[in-house]
Amino acid sequence: MLRQLLIGGVISLGNIAIHAVVMATVVGTARRALKWSHRQPQAWLAAAMVATVGVLLVAHISEVVIWSLAYAFLAVAPPEADLLYFAFVNYTTLGYGDVVPVERWRLLGPMAAMNGVLLFGWSTAVIFEVLRQAMRSHDQRGKP
Image (cartoon, rainbow, N blue to C red; front, side, top):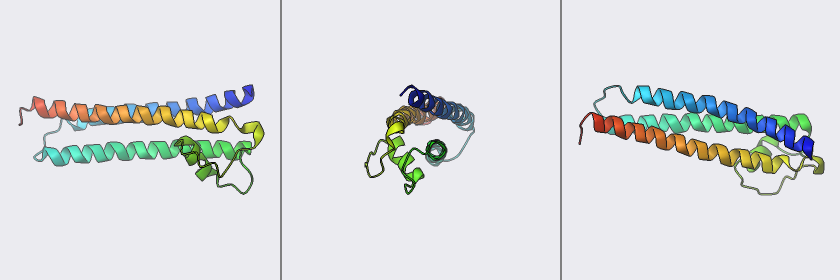
């Protein structure tokens, strides 16, 4: 059990590090981009939000791929299992249960789910921060 917790913790910390870099980049880029002058503030806000969510989507998919690679390396699931699908089901906490890990690795699924929940919450906070910055930028320009 300790081995599962340590390996799951290392994978989770790796994903957290990736997420931290992406989050810092997204917030910093949004902060700079939202200061640019533009003629259509609604379209600019929409573009900023779509870009933000798109980057976050790519980050989450990358983190799921990392879990699936770990599952492959450790032989966590039965040989016929689709490991990317299995990683998505765990990371998103969907939990269909149609693919079950081998018993000696059964804690990695819940650890991936915990990792996903934390990172989805963090992403939600970043989306809100970008929106807040956009509203502040809009208000500082004195536009109705």
